[in-house]
Structure formats: structure tokens, C-alpha cells
Image 1 (cartoon, rainbow, N blue to C red):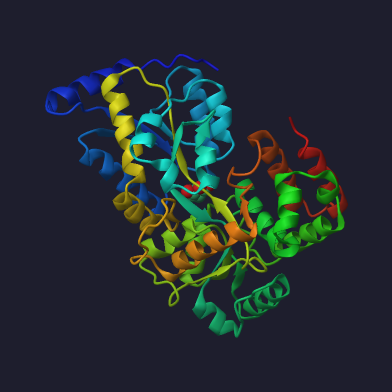
Image 2: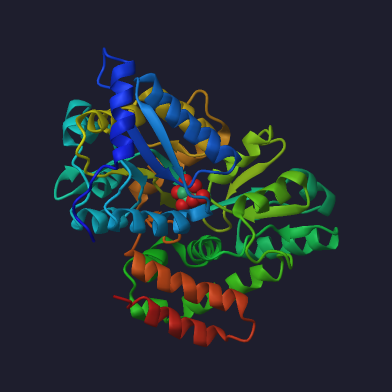
Length: 420
Ligand code: GAL
């Protein structure tokens, strides 16, 4: 990878222009790569833009559509290789270390020390934001991945009850089907398939199994009887999805639940951002419950912005101001109210947050103590990106290919976990 980051002439010209326009402050521009393009996501991104602009800097939007960020990461790689990295990019989990090892990320320790981030963040989060002891990224939120979203009206019609384990899930799915509804709204994309898969793994096998199989990648656990049951259960979910699921975007799947065409969706709480953006109220128009069998566990997904090395002083100042703004209580509140997540900053007042967020917050704290707080593989929190990619491919092939046996899938999963 090209290690020298040169600012484009364009950006320099813009920065100079901004400095002239606002002579009092050192105004710069921050180009921000993200994939927040759906209804709720876009509202949250707008809050970030507003924070930066309030500090007198310019926001250059670099949005690459595609849930889960696969497209965004491909575009980011080519931009960095060509020596034209954005100032900030949504990069998460172990990938932060991969990028930092390339020498392209900037330390934001000055801001982090001044603002006392070590005291404001859970250690499980701050550790991930640091490379060799220095902050190279700022966290935005905590998303919970193991949720089940339901349409109460659809459940009433079907005479079904919200499931708390996988047997109940299939009972509810049958009832919804008999009532003429699509039981499970699903978008057939790798990361969505794996979002479902990891919730099934957590619900069927429990947190210790999840960690052994999907975080430590223990071959005996990945190849064992519990994983066989997980794969069979996962595949059974597919029979309750509709034929248009392949390729569908996650927010369109959420829209099916919003409209009552479908009864449930297994998805992280960015889905709540969609319900809220559509004017729906939690507990009334939609329900949030832990994915079946996972009420005592929490799959976390922390969004964060990595900062790239810049040469221009004004833009570097703008970049640091962005980092400080992201951790401010005001931003943490407004952003997360729109995004569906909870603040990553500790000891925040959650008065304005709904019951789904309060449940998430309580469970985040409780599961951190019991050891059942686990990182999401589907959302790049758990393992190196090459391994995660290979495992996601296997899981999606199994989901899509009705001829692939569970045994074959399991063998391939073990092999994929050894990807270098
Ligand atoms: C996740 C990301 C969330 C949300 C979701 C769908 O990976 O962490 O912020 O955007 O993808 O795009």
C-alpha cells in the first residue's frame, strides 16, 4: 500500500478558500467515508455533519452505498493505494489494526488525552481504538446485533407470540405463514446471511460456544455437533423467507416489517433507525426482543472513524475537531437517537432514549460482567477480515445452495477459518 498520503490540489484549494472565508478560526475540510445511506442512517450522518460544520469546518461527503460496508471498504482500499485517502473513514474492529499496520493512520492522542477518553470509554472499546497504545480511531456508538424485530399487528393476526427460543421461533413462523404473511423478512447478501447465522449460533449454542467457534475459531468446536445443529437451524430459517430475498437491501427487508407484509426480521438495531424514521413507535408499532435464545447475551458492533494522516494543518485541525465532536455528550445523544444504537460514552443520561435502547444499555453492562458480551463476526468485530470474508462466503453458499449438505458446509467452514 502507498504510504504517502498526498492531498489533492482540489482539497488544498477548498481549504484555502475556507480559511479566507472564516479568518478567525483555522477552518479546514474533512472528507468522511461512510455507508450510511438508508433513512435512519442518513439522519444520523447528518447529525455528524452538523457537528463539524458548527465548528466552522467543511464536510465533504464520501458515502458509498451498501449495507455492512463491503462496497465502502473496496473503494477505500483503492483510494488509499492511489495516495488519496479521505480524512476519516468508517473502519471497525480488528481491521483498524490492519490499516494502522500499513502506517496510514494518524494518532489522535492529543484529543483523546485532553478529552480523557480512557475514562469515558469501556475498556473493551478503547483497546480496539488503539494501535500500539495510541488512539487511531474514535468510536461512535454501540450497536446490538442479536435482535428480533416484530410487527405486533402481524403477530395478532397470526395469533402468534414473540419467540424466546428457536422452537418458538419456528412455531411463530408457521403461524405467520398460515396467516398469509411472509414470516421472516430477509435480504440475501453475505453480511445479512451471517447476521442471521451468528444470532442462531448464539441462541442455539450460547456465548461460550460462540466465542470458541466464531472468535477463537477452535476447529473441534466449529466441526462439532453443536455447530451441526446451528447450521441446520439456520437453514430452516430460510424456508420462512420469500423468493425475492436474494440481493435485497436490509432496509427494504425492514420496510416489509414496517408495512406488515412480514412478521419478523433478524437484524442489528440500525433497523430501529428505519422504524423511527418511518414515524413508528417502539412497543406499539414495532417490537424489539433479543434474538431467540440470546436474551442473556449481547453481540456488539461498535462503529468508529479511523483518521488518516494528512499534510494540511487546517484539515488536520478539522479532523481533530471531528474526533472531539464525536465523543461529546450532545453528539452521542442526537446521533444514537437516530441511528438506533446506544452511546459508547459511559455514564450518559438515557432519558430521551426508548425502551429498546434502555434494554440494550442494561444488557451491555450486565453481559460484560457475565462474559456473554461477544463481538459480531458479520460486522467486523471479531476476527481478521480475510477469515471473516471466507467464512461468510461459506455460510452464504450453504444458505443459497439447497444441494449442499450440512456436513459439507461444516467442513468448508473449518477450512475457511484457517484462511491466512
Ligand atoms: C453495520 C454498521 C451499522 C449499519 C449497518 C448497515 O455494519 O455497523 O452502522 O450501518 O452496517 O449498513
